[in-house]
Length: 395
Image 1 (cartoon, rainbow, N blue to C red):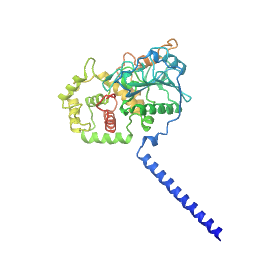
Image 2: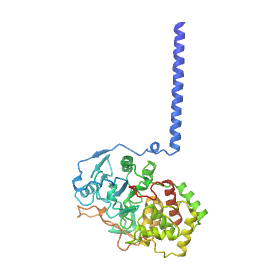
Image 3: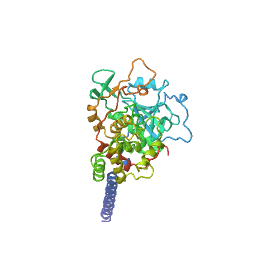
Image 4: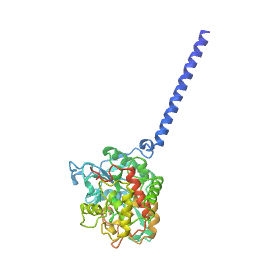
């Protein structure tokens, strides 16, 4: 009898323990679901994978140490426009370089220059009023041919270009490496950019198929969702209207970080011109629609206001939509007459195609992109990531 009572007591304890564990497990699942619903980047970081670092090709002796008070505050992505072997050779034989090289396959990433040194990857560049982005950025080169011309020529119009995809595993390596770098240096989302963003009239890499959205879903870089853009479109329509002047788009592109100044025109000069039309880059609220409406009206009243460079503006709009509205870019390029140059060479083994301009000499960057959607996307990004909107990445 005592034995039977002991068995029953033991079974009761086991049953209660199981129920308690099950209840705790359910609570844990619910907590995870709740965090995921709020968009916690660590919960959503499903695209990261382990990787191996190969350090056999480091070329540190060719590149200087970073300036002491100019820490790393940006990531710049490129594609190599070459095969892996050619990319590795040209990045390690002088001239252009990068800190990292990500092959198209495998689980190995190549360290080319240590991050405490300035690799020569950005060339002539500017972002958020910072020249020479080599000084403050980590450069990541990705093995991808970029595009091919359907007509097999050395340059092709955007109607005859075929952009080449990044393999799924390579995309995961891109996310994994970038996430580690972002966490090391706490890089602001607006400071994770492509070569095309910092050299608008020279470069188109890493192209419209680069996984910017996937990066942002994992806490790296900036991205505005369709819902956020639609919400901002409504705000603009309610407060400004459907007709958006070029000047208002220029103002916001410049404020976001793109270099659309006329040659030899200083930022101070632009700031003073904007003050004359009641816009302060320091004090006007980002969502001050009354002032934005006044700027919009002024832009229509005086379209030749001579504040920003028109050609650079065209290129900047192209770079922006390639990065943040890639579907619109791919749709829009069918109308463009500009040509992109295939810089791959069988004979030049010392320089990467990335060191040369992608733009044909006569390119005008002509664009008829939807001003309302471009403006709404910029506004959505600025309001979502306000910390560095009016500051350089390194401040």
